[in-house]
Amino acid sequence: MNIVFISPDFPPMMARFCAALRRCGATVLGVSARPWELLTDDLRQALTEYYRVSDMESYDAVVRAVGYFTHRYGRIDRIDSLNEHWLALEARLRTDFNVVGPREAELPAMKRKSAMKTMFAAAGVPCAPGMVLGDAAAARAFVAQVGFPLVVKPDIGVGANRTTTIRDAAAFETFLAQAGADWFIEPYVRGTIETFDGLVDRDGQLIFATSMVYSRGIMEVVLEDDEVYYMTRRVIPDDVAAAGRAILDAYQLRERFFHFEFFRTDTGGLLALEVNMRPPGGLSVDMFNYTADVDCYRLWAELLVTGRAPSELPRHYCVMYVGRKPGHAHVLDHAAVLATAGPRMVHHQAMPALDHRAMGAYGFIVRDPDESVVRDLAQQIVARREAS
Image 1 (cartoon, one colour):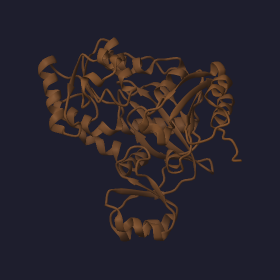
Image 2 (cartoon, helix red, strand yellow):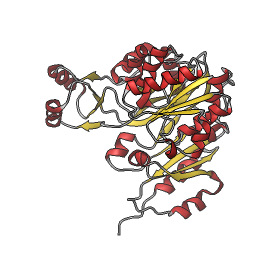
Image 3 (cartoon, helix red, strand yellow):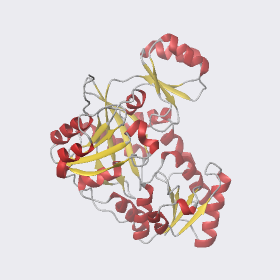
Image 4 (cartoon, one colour):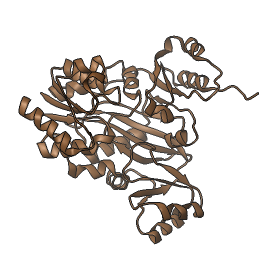
């Protein structure tokens, strides 16, 4: 099976997907702009061949790479990156090379916040109202209806990038005067972020699923330079599971990871926030592995290469990611964190610089069957000394 992997060198976790594909017998063909000699040894060993392009944002350059691979190896069976940034590139390549997977026509519902709202309605899942910023009068009417504060974000955007809050009419008028048309506005929802995450097979059946709950929203973490921790749960709340499965059915998702985000409001209700048709970032896939004692990198690779997949896997542990930022004075130093967690600490590492604002400069993963145990550990890890 010939699989083109877009940007296999970044983020670093992508090398593990490539290695799993190679172990499953795939011909793994990488395309990126990084010089070959700067790839990690593990990635170089995983790739059957690598095509370096001068600019990954140039479609002509990337299409020449895929054309070369087609000439050399025959029909391309899959094109993927598992990366939100390259979702449009993948879809265009699949369309042009007639490859299985999401095509350009399916892309708006996967990328645009406004189109996601339409899909949530089709799935029967509640969501906050919102609108694309266009006519100023319509925008003012919308704001008069929902009130302040507002959240403004690009209609097509990744994570919390360029997302901010607007708290009064004066700030909104300033935003209106400066913003372009392709912005999305919605009321600020108070609550916690919960997710429905997993992997579906070629028939859309769940292979693995979990739900994560966050200490704070990523937007607030970035804007306030706070630290974040989030946890996978052994038991997925019934309303999260029902909403997640309804959204999967609405999208008719096949052979893909997914990451759906919801707000648990202060009154206990659930509102859909957005969908991401890829695994969540950071060390989340490793958290999945520790949750079920499984290898999700290999699960995905076997699914692509053989089509075989297990029935839905059980979850044995609650797994917590805790990120720390160096500018904060913590009660526990690094050695004390490891000593306090003991065998519950299953992984820790420095995080890539691009993740520092949202995920922290250093990440810890702890696990235990008891949710209260990992919550307590997370609070100890991020606890700060009182100012003298």
